[in-house]
Every structure is written in C-alpha cells, then in structure tokens.
Amino acid sequence: MDNWNTEKPSILSLIAPCGMNCGICKVYLRERNTCNGCRGDNQHKAHHCITCSIKNCELLSKTSTGFCYDCIKYPCTRLKQLDKRYRLNYGMSMIGNLDAIKREGLEAFTNYELVRWTCSSCGGIVCVHTGYCIRCKKEIKQ
Image 1 (cartoon, rainbow, N blue to C red):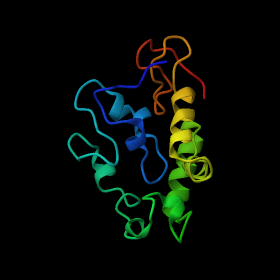
Image 2 (cartoon, rainbow, N blue to C red; image 1 turned 120 degrees about the horizontal axis):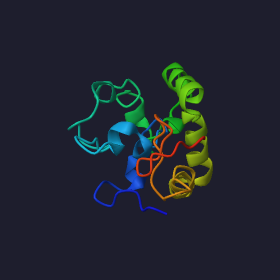
Image 3 (cartoon, rainbow, N blue to C red; image 1 turned 60 degrees about the vertical axis):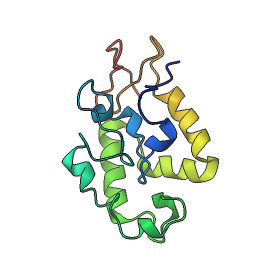
C-alpha cells in the first residue's frame, strides 16, 4: 500500500473539520500547485476552500477537538448540505466520517481511509472527485 505522499502533511492532519479527507481531493492530488489540505496554509488552495463557511465557522473554535461533531449545532444545515452533495456525487458522507472519527478515533478512521482509498491494482490513491487512481488511472467504484 502506498504511504500516500511522504512529502506532504500526514494523513492525520489532512482530515478537515467537516470530516473531509483532503488526501483524496483532486486539488491535493494534482501534480502542480497542490493544496496542503484544509488545515494547511492557503497557498494553492481553491477559493471556496479558503472561504469555506464550515472551516471558518465561529462555533468551530469553541470545540475542544476542532471537528464539527463536537459542535452544539452538529449537524448544522451547512454540513448537511455538504454531506448530501458528497453522498450523491461521490459516494462519501461527511457526517458518516465525523461519526466514525468520534466513535473510533482519528487514527482508526485514517487507517480505514488508507485502505478504502488505495487502489487495489497498483497501490496508488483513488481521487474522491474523479473516481480514478492517480497512478494507474483505473476507475474504482466506491
């Protein structure tokens, strides 16, 4: 199994407050001008990520974990909308991810993500947005 990209942040730091695994995002995975994830600096980050209402939520700073599941309004309308879009378009649930992190812990969740998003053919990473392995270009159904 690929160890993701050792030159980039650890997978533990790539889990956004909303439950998104930034390590499987097409902007993170591209070869040039890559993003360092939601919790990273804003260089090369998509504008919608910089201005994200969830990442910049005033209630998020009041949580002890830095994750939405720890918020008094969880799951809020913004998170529900994002979750619905990702479930319909990409077969992934932000709320499901957050519930798993809360229940199992961040390390167990990231271990699961490594298995889930690793190409069984070549060990590369499958992009959540395209459904293709970035190394061998094989389409992987999630």
